[in-house]
Length: 68
Image (cartoon, rainbow, N blue to C red; front, side):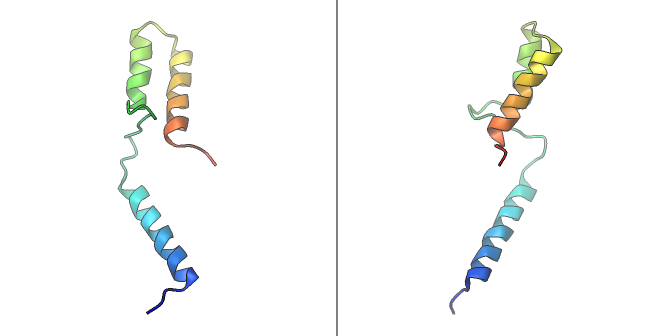
């Protein structure tokens, strides 16, 4: 039985949704393998300003989850 193009696209979409749904929303990992929240906490512990540490956290999230 041959799959049509629409069936293939549907299968890929369904697999993508299943993967996204299974990922924990609080678990954001930077490209280097560090948790983004750890980046923020370490920044604050090193005496960084709240604004600077928030920016580092946001950059980490964008690195882990690139926008299109």
